[in-house]
Length: 257
Ligand code: DC
Image 1 (cartoon, rainbow, N blue to C red):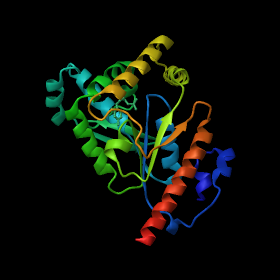
Image 2: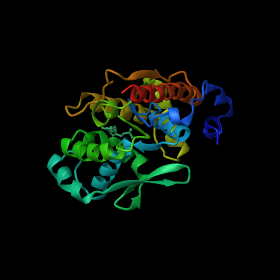
Image 3: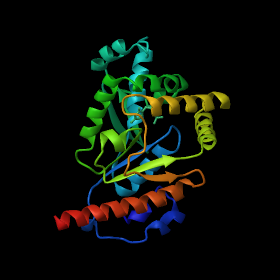
């Protein structure tokens, strides 16, 4: 199927394919997408993975799954020793189900449960713990060995894949992010006040960017993409151009070696 037709049905976006290099000219790459909470990282990452035929991994889902386990077992997320001791009992994997990639915790599909507010309110606390980070990053690095992967999170371009061929740092206006998140939760039937969403985002941004171990920051070689005024199709179009350029450059570099 031609590349442009594989974009979910965004017919108008077909014009973004401005050149069509032969598949043999295109190399497999790793795409790292980082940014603050609710700025559309997963939408962009999923779109890119679908068009390129790459795997998509939501690294935040892994921190959320750990948090859910702790809540289910009455383990205090701020008790770092207790959290570290629980890690050997936690297995996380992903499965493609229908249109999406579902997160499994110890064999159980927890895709819905990890998006609830109680997990959102505790996850940043859990993700500051170095033992948790080490365990997650080890699995994430292994997932990238075959390349052809798009991973989104907070430390993907800086820690997980510092050599990624394409790094995108996604940003958006905080109020726009809060409104998007509110709508997302409403659409899922989650009852929540707008102010609680604003507070949760601000608090997660603060913890994520000030923690000692691998804080959220833009990698030096990341390309900033501000999607405040972009539609999903427009941001995908921009990112695809960057991905195609990175794949061609990688192909040219390997030819000249
Ligand atoms: O992307 P998200 O909002 O679902 O991520 C949930 C939390 O996980 C986020 O507040 C910070 C943490 N996280 C992280 O520390 N490192 C990552 N690579 C991804 C997420």
